[in-house]
Amino acid sequence: MHIDAGDDFSESCRSTEHFVLVHGAGHGAWCWFRLLSILQDSGHRVSAVDLAGAAGSLVDPNDVHSFDDYNAPLLDLMAALPDGDKVILVGHSAGGLSVVHAMHLFGDRIKQAIFIAATMLQFGYQTE
Image 1 (cartoon, rainbow, N blue to C red):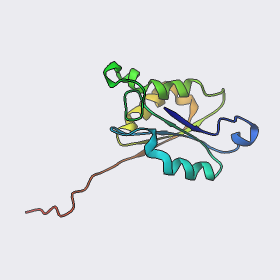
Image 2 (image 1 turned 45 degrees about the horizontal axis):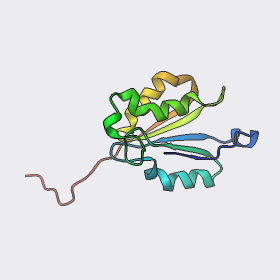
Image 3 (image 1 turned 120 degrees about the vertical axis):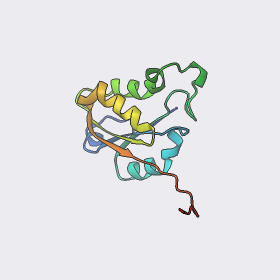
């Protein structure tokens, strides 16, 4: 699945930012639904990608044999951008690795990269 809010490439869309949201391990594009709505309601173009074999993807995880296979939906999106378009890539958790991969291959199409780290805290944890 690829969620793309705002497929219109008209001049009015070009005056706003295009955010590409990349999920972390164990997630899918669905995890961005709140942020996607907020950004879209603010007038931005937003794409959220299901990486191959991840939750929400139609690709069988057993058919993903390399990091390139896993990142194919993101890399395909980046390759399909109109000439001159630059995106803001946002990756959370392990999605940061996919963002770095896209930066390596499509650095000229990236305006900014944002990495969001997620930490699980155990409540009630005590040190001795």
